[in-house]
Length: 336
Image (cartoon, rainbow, N blue to C red; front, side):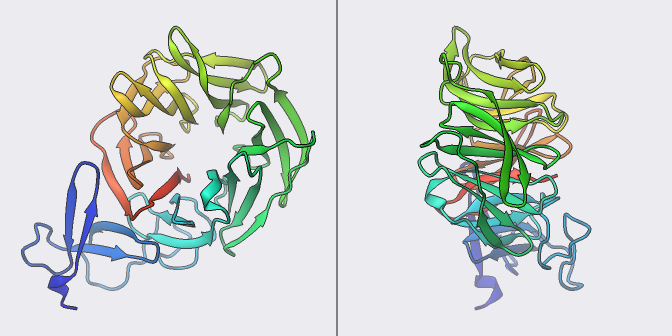
């Protein structure tokens, strides 16, 4: 195939970028476009012909060399596989490891050291898998059953990587210690007795290691939807956003624990919103789901239309990071 004829159109909800490799009429001086195994495409400028790219977003890893950790990368799940890409769109990796039950995938969470990925499936499955990044192997995680018939879901690592928080029947939050691929010493912090919880989901730990935010979509008051907050030291409370929102889901703490990103509906439409930890200064950013903060807290990566986009956490124009062919990305996490 002639280089001038190699064209990859990267579609986005707001624009179409035409990437041509060697096309003299292109408005880009030189553009690198890659089409890879899973149908994931990345576009970025390439100003050097000095040889293969040896850069990486992790100084311990050479671009193209096998990954041993996801640290420094943006990890995502698409088309049944775990993938990763640098925040500037370089060093795109796909097919790192299979996700066993993509149809029932609910969420995934890389460990703090980036060497393992915890995958949670829908409540009807009640199962967790643990993916080892270096070996690309997937093993089931053993979870103790406290009551016959209970269903486990929505697992999330603690900041120190020693524990996981997860839900039982979406009514009870529990925390257990992790040893290899097993959870032990399970402690229940709140349960649904007396309608304390209404279908809770998506627990996320703050960096202090004791605050856990959860979505409670059907819990509303005259001010709209709220975010459930469990402090393992102080108990249960609710965060009331300053802007009236509805159907809040997927709360995610900023790295410093001072702000939350959520998916919700509001006066300007459904999408990614940010707020202070007390609910103040609620601001809509962009349409999408699965928000995840950059390590410095200045940007948020998210999924929209199955593609990965990045937007400033303070507001402003968003840009497309990676285009993923349908059915597209299911979830994304920025690994510090």
